Each structure stands twice: as structure tokens, then as C-alpha cells.
Amino acid sequence: MPGGRQAQPGVATGQSVLAWRLGYAEVLVSRFHLRSNSELSSVKLIQTKQTFGHVIMKLAKISGLTGAAFSLCFFVHSVFHSFRISKGFAFFDSLFPELVGSFNTSIIFFMPAAVLLFRSAFSPVLEKASTVYPIVMAPTVLNVFLADDPLAAGLPAVLLTMPFCIIFSIIYLCFPAPKN
Image 1 (cartoon, rainbow, N blue to C red):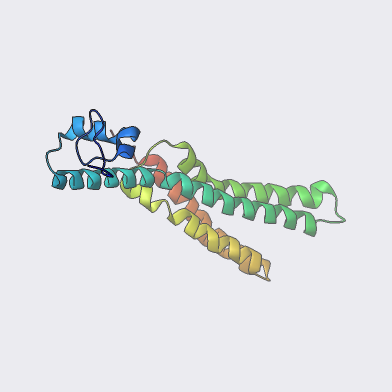
Image 2: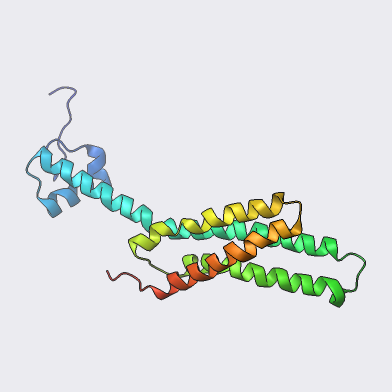
């Protein structure tokens, strides 16, 4: 037919040339032995679910990077604040203890990010729950930046966010990775 599509060698009629060139047609024909268009629709649905599952598997890495960025903001603010309040004092009298405290706090805030970034696989439930880490870190950092009083800035971070980060890291380290 003029203007119609021609079937390429090895491609079922109705398959697009683009799908054939990308290799989809060969995979679909050989793996699923397509006989009708309804089966093609179900195969596309299966591929969509597999793609969505693949995106979900990257969710922990995205959450780890986002949480690490928030933790880095907190660390930079803490170091800046340490230098600001220790002007005019000796290094070991004021600045050194402040920097040690900043590093200790930041280690706790970076622990969940390290677990999420360096562990290879999580169960699907833990993968989805990993988004809680940046959601908790965002208000903590926002509170530290916006609070006028050091006690109002640090108390929620010490009483709520630090225990959360420790418990979160322990849970994600203790649960076994899914078996493929």
C-alpha cells in the first residue's frame, strides 16, 4: 500500500520500525510469542511495571543524596557559627571545642545518607520509606537557619532529628537485602 508501513524482516506486522530498531520487537516476539494485540498491551503493562520498579530501586540513592545535601547545609552553618562565636578567643579555648561539636553532630546527620548511598539493595518497603530521611532533615535545617535563639535551633535537632538518624541508620543496616 502506498504510504503504509512495511514490515521489516523478523518483525511482526503492526510493529513499528522504531521498536524494531531499538530491539523491542525481537524481545517481545521471542520472549512472549505474541499472537494478538491484547497480549501486546499486557506486555507493555509488564514493561511499565518493571520500569517503575527500576525507578523505585534508585529512590534510596536519591533520598540519600538529598539528605546528605541537607546535612551538608547544616554542617556548613555549624562551622560558620563556630567561627563567628569564637572570634577573639584562643583556638583550643573556644574554636576547637565548637568544631568538635559540629563534626560530631554532622556525623550523626550523615549516617543515614551513608547507609542509603553505600548499601547496594533494600526491600521495596524500605526503599520507599527512605524518603522520610530528607523529609525530616529539611525542617531541621530550616529551623536552624530561621531560629533566632540557639536553644530553639538546637533543641529540636538534638531531641528529635539525632535519635531519628541513629534509629533510621540502625534499621537500614540490620534488615537484610532482598534476595534476587
